[in-house]
Image 1 (tube, rainbow, N blue to C red):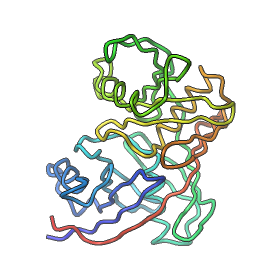
Image 2 (image 1 turned 45 degrees about the vertical axis):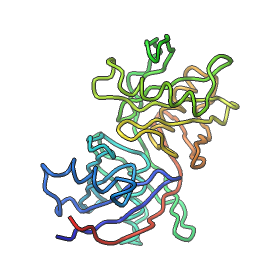
Image 3 (image 1 turned 30 degrees about the vertical axis):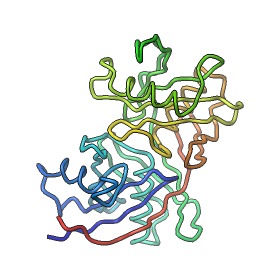
Image 4 (image 1 turned 120 degrees about the vertical axis):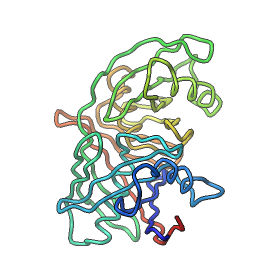
Length: 265
């Protein structure tokens, strides 16, 4: 049996897209694990099962480990780029996720890349707390941007580097205080208008970028790290822009469809 598949990425955070009608519900976690495998599959950070709608599309997201996730800012933009690729006259659209409906608008098209702004909603549960992790007490910022986020703000005694990410990331992502797991970001506030992040994605591990991670990091940096509410967020894959307003969080960046084909299911 063949199923249709597309691959897209935003700043190296990559996803596979399959029409949900071509899948069997109880087989979806295993399908995600097989397709996302970097060696035996196509390879991706997640699998998005989608259905077109009049307004845009509906989506269900599975992480690479087969676990279902509420939302991904980059996956939403990638799906929007896929939809607009098939309906080029569409400038405004809505992608419905398990975390709610996300309105998007197309800002620019440059070659295969499409720049979009997504209204990601309002952060909830924002607070600072201390958690025992990796053998020490770690000060974190906890919040939800449609999915759970755990932010570690860097400082003189808290470097933001790969070694620290691999030490704290898995410990915090699976911490007992987060029954459904959490995404983890290490954040360095470089200036009021620029922050740098490293990401440990729940169910994936290190990723080149994260849309919701960028949003959560920007909110945490503004609330507790001295950053403004309008910042560039730099990750290993590139720079996205986040603006936290009274209307919610606006995430701006590009997405690109890189492949369409078929998967032997």
